[in-house]
Length: 127
Image (cartoon, rainbow, N blue to C red; front, side, top):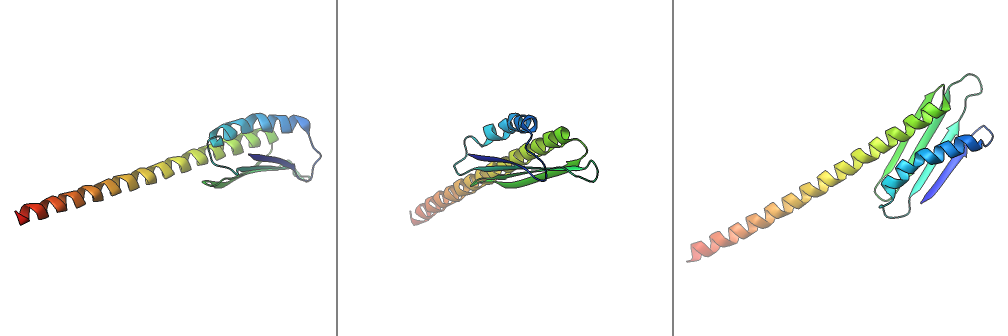
């Protein structure tokens, strides 16, 4: 798993990086069973003109490719929101993938059942 935290237009701040790493654990745990490669990019960008900071989180893996971003006045609240939204999006995508997979299995079983039923009808007709 490749994780990168980028400080854009600002100096590196260890406190923010530590906070971000603690919060990203949720995403890392969710993706722990995914096949590699997995890339997590967190971009922190303050506004110099007024307090309207921007945080962007990108997650890319073989099954997921998601981007979540948010802007607001407080870095820590924005960071929490971006990570929570990303986790919700990943959970929704996983549920969608499971539903599709289960639907395909049901359809294939239905086809198999119909084929077996057709074979039985043919045998009955021949007798």
